[in-house]
Length: 193
Image (cartoon, rainbow, N blue to C red; front, side, top):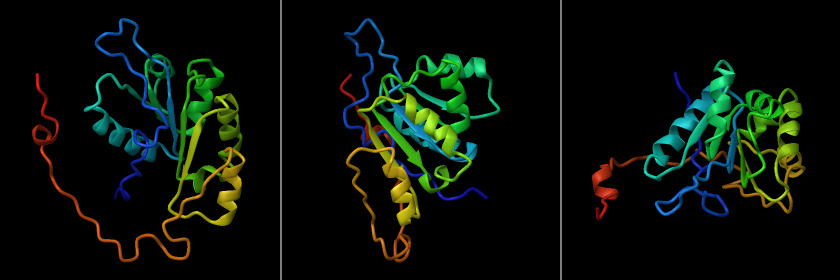
């Protein structure tokens, strides 16, 4: 059975909006600006699906999924035109090393399930990826469990980090009620056109 839904931060916490073409712009902005790394293909697919669902209401934002088992040729083509990339460290590192994925314009790095990404097996790939990123970027490290050793490990990838915990002494889900409301797209996203 699938696990809980993935966290939902990627499009929201960007320090500046994602640059995309507008109706008055003839040259499309196709640079990769947000990179989301997840430890497993399944989680990367879930995150990609959530961002794609939200992104369909945002004109011109392209989201790429980069996980093992897919065509390198197709990934290379997708990498040239996406604004948000979601992937696993192995595939993303491979694409960067082959010059198929440019990280020069990244403004936001999200490490989802950071506790798993900090495990020894991912560390070399993570270090290789982060070494290619611009120095000035926002980095978010997200994890359901955030022990002190994780905070220490992710701090090496950040400048002036701020650690936010809902309740450091207790599990987050105790006493939390979850609910949802169905909102029809026409109700929320009416246009004047």
